[in-house]
Image 1 (cartoon, rainbow, N blue to C red):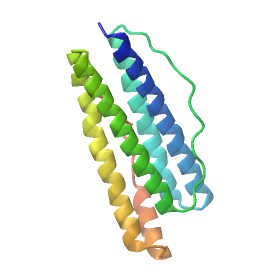
Image 2: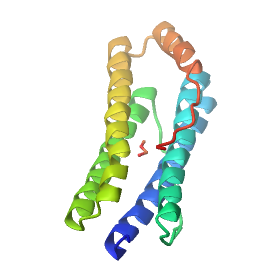
Image 3: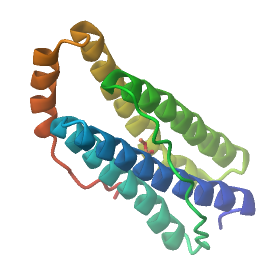
Length: 169
Ligand code: OFO
């Protein structure tokens, strides 16, 4: 049995994951507008992964016979000025998601909900990967600066990013 507190925090986390998908889609549209189609692909693939993250939480609540409460999704930020600025926003967003996942883990411990505590480990590991991938892009962008040829190469690399469905089972 999931406690009300754990149910609420998991429902809030579903909302955060779908908001993340919206945010990445807004970024994808920006990159498309400025002709960086590889960056657009990278952020669009990320948006799909965020939908998976939301769906995994959704399915978990269903599996635990717990009420899913879908909330409205905030309008995402759309003030973007450069690839570096976008990836810095991504990093700070992902750090805030990591903090919120950590709060789910801490609350599961407090509530002695070992199933949720075990379930959320998948997200803890995923956040480490996501933050590392974003820091890697920021480092590359920092090295290349505004040099168009390098940006083009990075854009070509990002075109290759494929979507792979995420699942925890
Ligand atoms: Fe970008 O991370 Fe979901 O959880």
